Image (cartoon, rainbow, N blue to C red):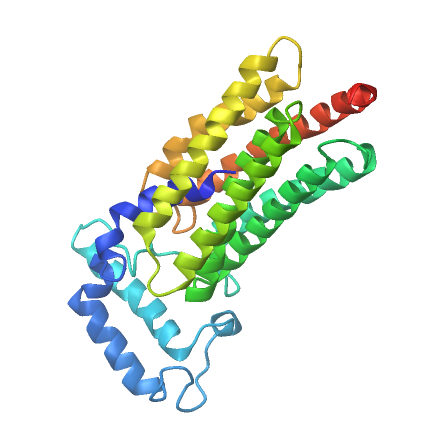
Length: 316
């Protein structure tokens, strides 16, 4: 739900060195990649000069140059280990053992886990919530934003490319903003419709401006972090307000508090930054794992609140 907020805060600390991490600027790595490209790659670095027996998994959107970088990355890691040094990052990322062509297997698997929970709970929502429910369309929008976000998270962690990175960050921002919007619309439900329309217009304009700016030129990680922090703060404030206002009258507010509480506790993982355990499980991957119960409890709140509103419909 808030994956992009903290992802961006970590990236901010790396802002000045994303393209120049210690690993990929190390002489051993640079020399290895240069020699590998000259030996087996064509001039563009995309195809092999001739048939080279590489595993099928290394061909999944991996160019010849990409595979050279991957193999040389591990050669460099071994050099660091032999010297007793901590493993470095390469191009702003920790070394990961790819699996069947998947660049970050754990983050991909946990992204798919979150996607699966969204799909399961969304199907339950469609079965149990009537279309006449005053929040029906809002939760449909939330579901679409969330499903789209986790699809792109899975794609990005499968293969980190400029386009998949952009779509992951824009989609994750959309999830944060859409979640803040949905809770805001729930708070405005009993107010005059003009407030909901104004809130909707501001939210849409905020997203369009954000997406347009990031889609032109170099990706502005610093701005991206600030924009997500703003959306995250709005989300947190809306959730707290709803829980405090309806704590006694609406039992479903407890599910919302549980979701926010788990998320708050798990933030330590996303703020942490350590080399992957077994070259697979880094802090970000484990944080994706902890967002799974957050997803469940947030949908539990949606279902409970929607059923409550259905009983209240005659009053609207």
